[in-house]
Length: 376
Image (cartoon, rainbow, N blue to C red; front, side, top):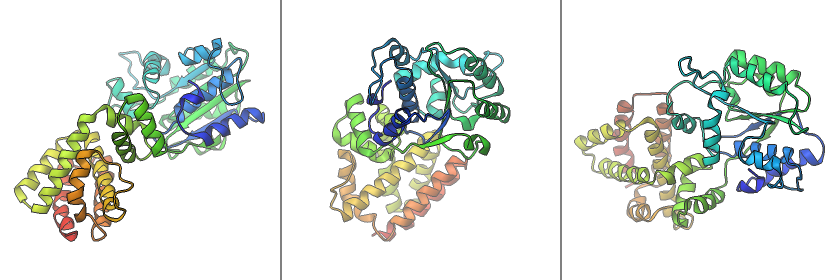
C-alpha cells in the first residue's frame, strides 16, 4: 500500500514524510483518530516508505522487492499485533494465530473497525483482547535481526484493548526499545490506555475523512452514482467504514428509509396501536441496525433543515429520500429540531450501553408524537 492509494489526508502524509526528511523518526508513535479514519492504511503506507529500497520524495517506489512484499503484507520486517478472541480449544493465543485472516481482510478492504474484524471471523459479541502472550510474541519478533537491514516495524492496532499484563510489558519495550525498531500504535481512544504508554509516544492526530473524499472513494471503488455517494458520505460523517457498509448493504438503507417514513407518519397520526407495532419492529432489529437507524434519522433531520432554510443547495439525498422530504421537511423546523436531535442522540447513547430496545423505542415514538406536532 502506497500513500497514493489513500484518498485525502495530505496533512498527515506530509507530517510522516517530514519525519524522514528531517531525520527525526520517533521510535514510538501514536496514531490517534476516530473509527473509520485512515489510521491503518497510513501506518502501512508509512512502513512501506521506510522499508522501500528506492523511495521517492513523496512515496515509496511500489516496484522494488520490499514494496512488493509490503503490498502482499509478507515483509519479514513488518509485524502486526491486534485484538483476538482467546481460545484454548482453537489454539488462539495471539495475533500470529489470526494473521492469515488479518492479511486477507486488509487486502480485501483496509478500512474496517473492531466490529467488522469480528464479523469477518464470525466472532461478533465476543471479547477480543491483546493478551500477555502477544507481548511475548512481540518481544520475540523484535529481538531478531532486521531482514532488510532497515527498520523492524510493529503496528499495534487498538492498543486500548491490551490487558494490564500486556500493557505493562509493552511499556517496558517502549522504555528500552530494541535497536532500529519502530512502534506504531493505532488507537480509536486513549481513555483505556496506560498514561505512561501515551507519554512515551509521539502523537499524530488522524482526522476523520472529508465528505468529498468518501464520496470519490465510493464512486471509484463501488461504482455508485454521485447522488448516492454524497448521500452516504454525508450520513457517514467522516467514517469510511460506515460509508462502505452502507453502500455494500444498500438494502439496509431502503429498510431504514421505509422505517423512518413509517415512524414520521405514525407519529404525526398519533395512532397508539401503530406506534406500539412500530416500536416492536424497531426492537426486533439487530443492535447495530438499531444504532444505524438512529444515525440515519439524525441525517434526515439535518437534510430537512437544509431543505427548509437553504433551499436544498447542500442536501445529500437519494431520489426517494428527497421526494419524501420535499413534502415532510416542513414539519422539521426551528420549533422542534433541537429536541428531535436530542432525543435521537440520547437513544443512540443508551443503545450503546445496552438499554432495553423495546422500552427505548416505545419511549421514543411516544415523544415523537408531541415533537412532530410542534413543527406543524
